[in-house]
Amino acid sequence: MSWFSRKEKGIVTPTASKLDAPDGLWYQCPSCKKAIHTREHRLFAYTCSGCNYHEKIGSQDYFELLFDNSLYTELDPMMGSGDPLEFTDTKKYTDRIKATEYNTGLKDAVRTAYGEINGLPITISAMDFNFIGGSMGSVVGEKITRGMRHSLETGKPFLMISRSGGARMMEAGFSLMQMAKTSSLIALLAEAKIPYISLMTNPTTGGVTASFAMLGDFNIAEPGALIGFAGPRVIKETIGKDLPKGFQSAEFVEEHGFLDFIVDRKDLKDKLSSLLGMLK
Image 1 (spheres, rainbow, N blue to C red):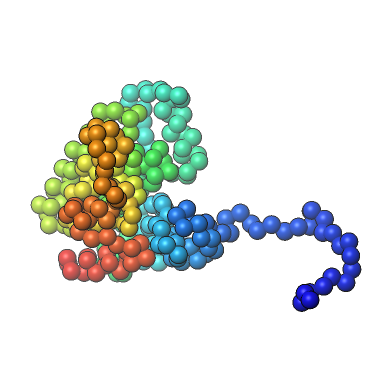
Image 2 (cartoon, rainbow, N blue to C red):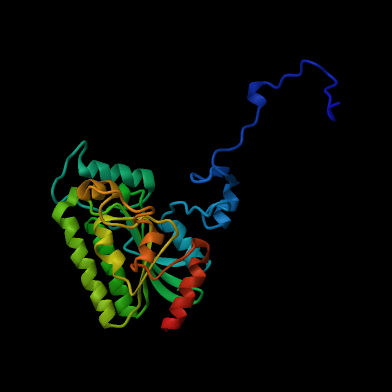
């Protein structure tokens, strides 16, 4: 016998009176498919409480996660891209920029800010993949180098959080020039003995990997991050051989000596402050 029985028959709830769960209330992990409350997901630093999958997040989330009390001062917040080549593919580059700015609320694929991590001063540049795949154009290179100059002027350590598909094709050679530009500032940081920490997240590829992402005094990564120059498919077709299991994952890259350590995002703030404390 059922523990509940309806006394009256034919009770129907009108469609207009039915309540649906609000959009965005639940998060489903794309890896293990577990559904968790978005509040819980946020408390776990946007990682899955079941399988520890690290969801892609943007600069705002990293700033709130790392800076004490989410307090920071942003550098050059209104700097936006020009169109030096008057580039057009399926649409004008200028139209693509305007549409992306409207959809994301961002001015370009990187933001730079300074503040404190557990009381220790730091300058951080964080990339946003939602802005044209986190591609590196003139503005990205300029904002990163200005952040590094700020570290040079103030003596603060510099943290680079990379998430990018590589160079921005709409700016061609201007984009590729940012590799040398950022690398030269990293050399100045080294001369001044100012720590430069590079955090690679999923994905970090192309010209970003070939320049500032791999030039840190400490190269670290989030678990499972894709790190490489060309994509696995391109490499496989070029060499004509099957690639090792886990090729270009953070764990594979660490095993082959290109990373100092892998850090869980939930532990990132404490790990960084411990590292900065040792470097004072």
